[in-house]
Image (cartoon, rainbow, N blue to C red; front, side):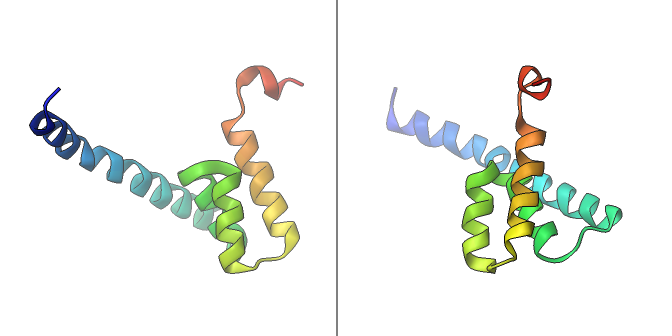
Length: 90
């Protein structure tokens, strides 16, 4: 595979790679507002759902310095939304 082809494929996939997290973050943010979730909890759930689960929540938590209960809630929500169907029945 040539470098030119790698650049061409990378350039054509860039809108998808940037657009998908942007749409996910915006959607979760709007849904949080609609459901009345505000502040650090909304941000943590947004980042966890839209970006990368518990690791993203932990990283955002280090910056935001929220209450431990907000972090725990966001991780719980994130793990429920990303769990496989078989693990949900346990």
